[in-house]
Length: 396
Image (cartoon, rainbow, N blue to C red; front, top):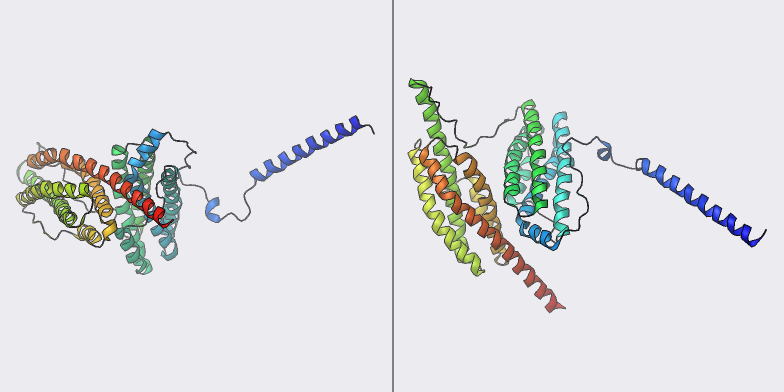
């Protein structure tokens, strides 16, 4: 055989081998992976979100994501809590519908949580977000319940959690700087609303409340109502306005208590100055909301507040000296971030003109404080990273 003929046979052999390899790879990609878990093969829920495509963000886009780091942590924490509770429900529930709901929550919130942590990783932010004390307490309490009680308590928590999560994600979508954070928040709102609808259905099946009590005001009095009927509606609306004012008074009492702690313990000069302003401004508004609560329905404001407010104060009191500034700013961002939409939506829909006027007067101040707290959050994080870097350098 000539050298030329030998080369031609070699080339044909390589081509044939390559073609065969391509067919093998194509067939392998079409087959399901051996050992794939049952959950991976279950049909995805319509609200399961596809993973975000890989991105190479610009410097400006990365800076905007970093500026939204508090929002990213908040969203990631929400998803992590739902995965934790869903996993617990898979193990402890005795009801088929509850178990199926829990499986869907684990799958969906794992997917959404992964998108938030991937975004954080791309921008050099921490990807590990521990449960906050409220979330941990909820998990601990559920783990101690019997099966029937567990199902009702879990579904009640799911209704409450998804109502709150929808509002949180709407707030994040409104105030975030990054287009990517806004996109994830908008997708999360859609998924969370579908979760909420399903949670209510399953909750009704196990005898759990399908609506969480809120201090939302009653609908405005219709001008066509007359006599005793109109008085009843007005009385209900006035009582609702009083409850709304009480909730805002509690929020203001808490902010003053937090600020007083920060005035004593904060190390960062900017954080101390911010705490001074918060104590002054929210102290004045606290008194106004307390008076409005008393005026509408004779609602009394307990200076000790409720357990959720108290828990946040306890969390700050227990913060270590080196972590105090960060914990304080994080709590304020979380509180004010929830207060803005609460005032914006429900306060402006109040029955009483003096409630609406108070909301309109204070809302710009709350927004300004929220922006200032977010700037402080970035500053405190940057200072913490710088100190950590110096500490590592000195050890080397």
